[in-house]
Length: 445
Picture 1 (cartoon, rainbow, N blue to C red):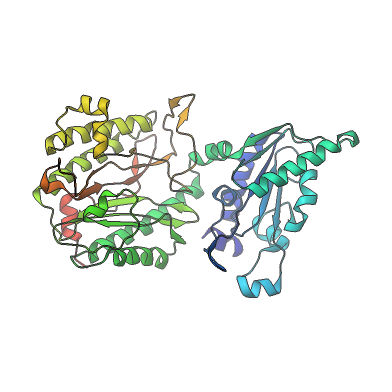
Picture 2 (picture 1 turned 135 degrees about the vertical axis):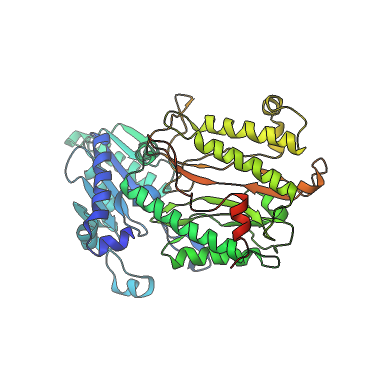
């Protein structure tokens, strides 16, 4: 969407990236930001994965092309410099069209653009006089080496008036802060990704019935993602039935749906790198057993309480503790734990059935950029933050201490929530999650 609109000549996406760069320029002061767009990855032999650009690079440029480098300077013109692969008719016949320096100027708003092979020569000049260089230290070894080589060259030429930066700073803190509060472009992409994902989840629910393979559900989800314009899944789709649902990051998706079991789907589409992250759990046969329903309601209650806690000034730790207490109370009622909630929390006995945290930031990465603690205290939620609320309970099939009717049940309910002054907005509200809604939808396709 963003790239296509840029190439079509629309000003809006270009303006979004320009505004982001202007924000960063003000924070840079006399510093210079250097980012790498990423490289193609080998899948096997001479085949490659589909290219996905570095999130920070794309966030500031809208350019999805291997090898590109951004230099953003706060202290002097040119402020926005891109290094890209040159146009090459022969290479483009085999591997697709390139932007070239001309396209970087015309479509992406660069002040100056150079072929990639000029980076080594031009980078010292662009860093000369900056007081610091901001880059993702350790993320790309070739970028680290290029920057260090440029600084060494500037140091050696100091007697001729060239001035090397004195400080290297990790860009992920600065970019993470900018990405924390979602701007209009980010929210538009997130809402679109979530809308596409909602349709896909509904389609998956409709085709669920005993005998269907997990990979058939996965295929339907990802077909709907692509059919509706998403680039890809934002992460490996999890489609786990029965005991497979108790594996948190299960991605084999090779099992068969069976009558009497639950199906857990954790899947989200990616639009312009922004990804949805939605989990729903429902009965394969279309009806919860009484034990499954009781366990589901515990998780649903925790999910609702966590969402209600996602208010300005609250924090992720408070959300987690709210959900955790409800889950611990539920574990006791379900016969999973004998201890009271305080004891279960203090001893961490609950981790037998609830092993993960309740929330993470969501945005241009499924586990998005941004610090969770500031000066060793949980970060207060602010308007514009987007996070997940995803409590769950997982009872392994071979857990001899659990009630027999709960063994092999994994339940997670995950929503994406926007923090607002007026209260939390559940961006994923269109995806059903009550017992009645689910029982009315499952297998009706």
